[in-house]
Amino acid sequence: GAVVSQHPSWVICKSGTSVKIECRSLDFQATTMFWYRQFPKQSLMLMATSNEGSKATYEQGVEKDKFLINHASLTLSTLTVTSAHPEDSSFYICSARPTSGRAKSYNEQFFGPGTRLTVL
Amino acid sequence: QKEVEQNSGPLSVPEGAIASLNCTYSDRGSQSFFWYRQYSGKSPELIMFIYSNGDKEDGRFTAQLNKASQYVSLLIRDSQPSDSATYLCAVNQRASKIIFGSGTRLSIRP
Image (cartoon, rainbow over all chains, first blue to last red; front, side):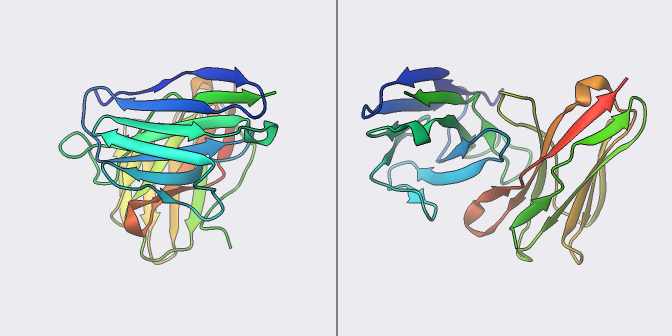
């Protein structure tokens, strides 16, 4: 149980195009989802916190107009990288915190498998 | 000072020995502490969480927390080659954010 999926698992796009990544909680509801970015040999960097039905909260240094987050339902959050450039190439990982009942710890998050974005 | 600090390693441990991974954090208000394991190219998977001072054991894994020293550790007993991975320490801060350390690369040598 507590499965989170991401789609696509990898994507290659041209510079200047936009890419949408979906994060779904498959067997639980998640009021809050998180988006992370991980560059090679570095740790996960929190980009934004996505709350269902409200605007996302972005971390310092993350451009909200470039990384558009939509959390329209309790099981789906999307991250759109607009006008992608080669420096946006990274491993994007989402996580979801169950609304109730599924987590052993209050702040436990379940991670998706990640999306590898390569911008040419 | 980084919010969550870990030694990047690599930490090399012989098979069957105890691997000891350490982490310090800066926010005294932190309440929950997590250890994740991440294999190359994969997303993290939760191994242990702890929020009370002392030790918490789960199989071959023991998490230790000392809030006064702002220190959390993970011990892996009877290390196996499959334990070779990067171990991420994560700390829950206010507003429910979880901040990750940079990870410690662990290598178990046969």
